[in-house]
Length: 149
Image (tube, rainbow, N blue to C red; front, side, top):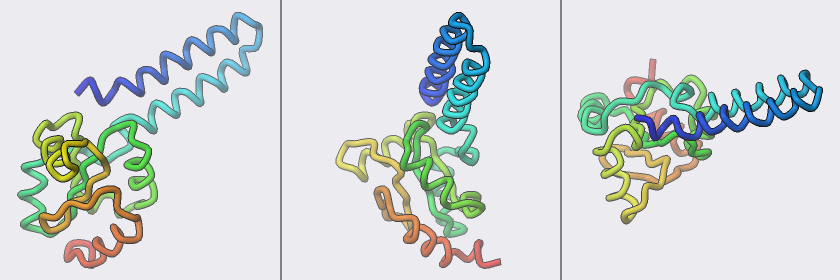
């Protein structure tokens, strides 16, 4: 669990150091702006931006029942973040598995990617797709019985 928070903590720590230097230089307004930027970067790269993660086994079990897609992701991945943001409200119509919090999820991703932990990996009806195009993911959501209402 702590692995997912390393990058956000580094952003906050780095921003604090830079802001402290600016305050000592006599520019507190600039320091506040820099710290705000670093805090925003920390939030964007944290697990807080993504929907609540569930375990890989539970996500796969639910996906078989209701047909929802399973997205394997990790914090700090710009492709995962881009997919999450660009999906908008549809982001809640997928099961999200954080591979840094779930070893079974990491194993699924490594099997699908020849040993690499390449994310986002989207599983549709049991088949993995690595870093799929947003339009393709939306098409898959459109065929989802749960998203038709």
